[in-house]
Length: 112
Image 1 (cartoon, rainbow, N blue to C red):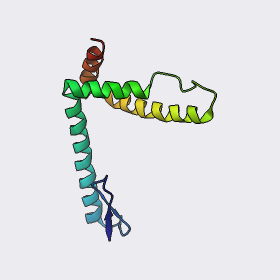
Image 2 (cartoon, rainbow, N blue to C red; image 1 turned 180 degrees about the horizontal axis):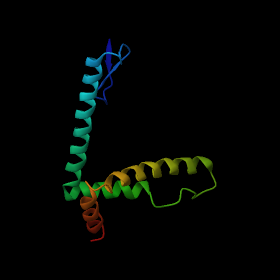
Image 3 (cartoon, one colour; image 1 turned 90 degrees about the vertical axis):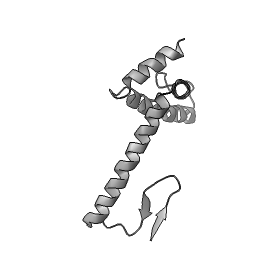
């Protein structure tokens, strides 16, 4: 019996059979559809000035260009490392050829 995670479109199945080509194909198709929706949503966010401003604010909060060693407390360093990792991941996506124009525009708008 398949369970559904409210945050996912793919069923979480305890009975998934990876040797069944039909099940593999179905899961692969759903994964591709989900990836397309995520990319479309990201592009929609970047297509608006408000979306770019929000994303710039998020990126600034994540501080991908700053050091994580702001205090000698290891928990603070771990927390800062986690934020930085998310920021670097977002930055990596923004600097791909597909989104580079949006990223450049976002930087220009942030400096207005």
